[in-house]
Image (cartoon, rainbow, N blue to C red; front, top):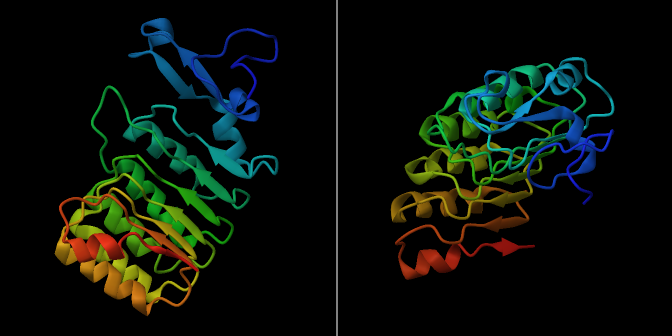
Length: 225
């Protein structure tokens, strides 16, 4: 990847990101233009592109920008009527200043439920909790376009059962990663039982899910057909 620079060659912030994404984000130091912390913010170009169905923006890539719950919810608001984006790269947005809440997940869920264009969703390492997980699971009961879903390193916990219920009726997903989701034996077993009823999943993985029984740990290693 090229250095993180603007078209005029000036520095555009820490880290290295795909060149095409650079124009959609600004980087501020704490105190500059009222910024309350150092880091990236999505700029007007991103919101305009999402809201106008800009045909050049088919992948929404906000990975690893450190956005908090409020900012992610704002981006989802701009996305809600978009019919061009086919892939959501939303992973690794853990705020260093605020505990992640539920606004992001709750704003994302209705988008997933109604979308006819989104096929791939990466949500790994976002600290999604109960309300967000339940809402996303419910949304995927209705979605008919998403085939690939990465939920690794979130907090499904007991709500793995809700994802299991989704798998009973979803006929579109073919790839699902639920590694590191803090499940216990009861919900892990329920998820596996529901997975056996699903006819479309070709890849499944759920490594490193806490103090589970040996047999469950073995089954949660998953499969690739």
